[in-house]
Image (cartoon, rainbow, N blue to C red; front, side, top):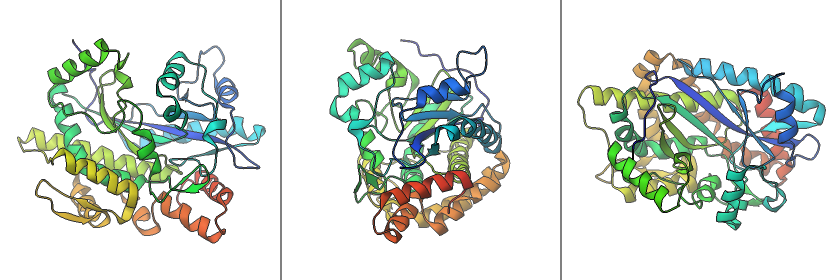
Length: 378
């Protein structure tokens, strides 16, 4: 089987941001995606180029164009958000984002009328109906197909850093789950979701996909819903590990980190250097630890089993990436992670609001809406 890999500019960047549509009065989810999508559609066009439907009618996805910098991609998203608000505000609908909605009932959510979504729910049943979750996808251009899978596997060594920083789903169906990122554990219940399989060359990937297609596990490549995966039709490596992010500045900080890491590993390959790696069971343990403990996770650093608090290793990593950020023009955005390290990740800010509100989760939704409007953590 031949899987072509599209040509793309090295370390170009694009961002996809899944957003919840919530009632401005109650904070509960609203099933109005079809109305919003129709209202933002330009005259004469089939759809808005930067606003897409998602699995559920309470969700829309805003996407940037291809940017040379994270700042350019962020400007695209900001313009699209302004267009959305012009449509949602008259409907008494707010735009909100977190890994999960704090109290919405999964059983009440309606599925978008598309064959691929109907088939997903038909196949996955109860687990598919629990997917009231929101994430962020960052695409980074890779100029050489031979680099894609080595970089993908190197990115698994920093997966807990990305997951801990973005963790924003401590509540689910009105309950405190005890996890920083409950979305992580929910999403991996879908077939072909979770960590990527152990393929290291493009022919190996082609053979794997051929087998998955032949046996009917998938119908299309994009049904491989890995936390980090190639996107052959775009010529990118797609980072899908992030929980939903409540505000634009934090989103761009996380995107800058992913952008810098891919470029960093690509540069190492150019120099003939060996990329970092660790045993699969260390990667799996790190994923669980960061989902459970978030910024308090003690993670495994390398194949020797050395460990450190994730925030301590993040500070080391950010220092190491400073020259890369300068080269990519995202120094300012990457520095925004200091705000997350100081004020707490999304799940920690939600927990603080809930504690101050005697456990009232509608106050958490109000806080998330306010962060979206402010454009930065509160």
